Image: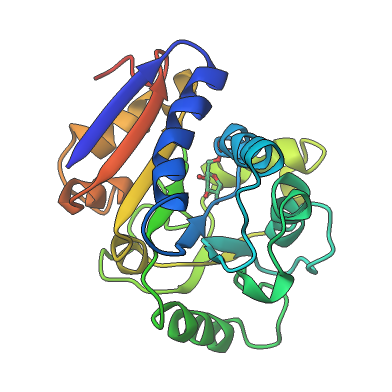
Length: 242
Ligand code: GLP
């Protein structure tokens, strides 16, 4: 079930998304958070940092699981998702590093590392999972064709995704890793609530496919049609086909 909010500016979109996150943070138990990388959630993370600094909301006991990581980048690479999360959130709140989980993309056996990640994730129930959406309809790094029953796995990235993400790699697609370790679609669907943020015209087709299109692995995000509680935060451009 989708709850859709459309706002004019990215800051308004982020502030609205934070309201759902705030409800979870201030709920009746210490939550487990599922977190995402990419440009879309950065404004939400800024709101979480502001709230931590202004209101003292503590992350000392909060556990986090991130969606995905590039295969082949060391954790301290400037574009690893491990680094992204520290720069954009973890370094600014009081979460201990041992509470943070990001898939390992630089181990010797990525498949085994994915299985270990899924085993750890399955010990918890994620209270809220933050998501962006790729222009090809991917969520996390589950590209078109990925089975709906997938759990944490490795995935070859599509040319479109590598082109989209080249902006983080000196606009050079050759520097963008060719594969990733990612939570699967079934792993994501276990979260109690989902916050999905999408802005900009290049997300309009993917947003339409997610909400109005047929439920098909051609648009991995369309699996969310079966989720009971998805909060979608859009600007007018991303919502233009709805
Ligand atoms: C990346 C990430 C996704 C993200 C998507 C959109 O490839 N793996 O988790 O949602 O692309 O990114 P952005 O928010 O930068 O548009």
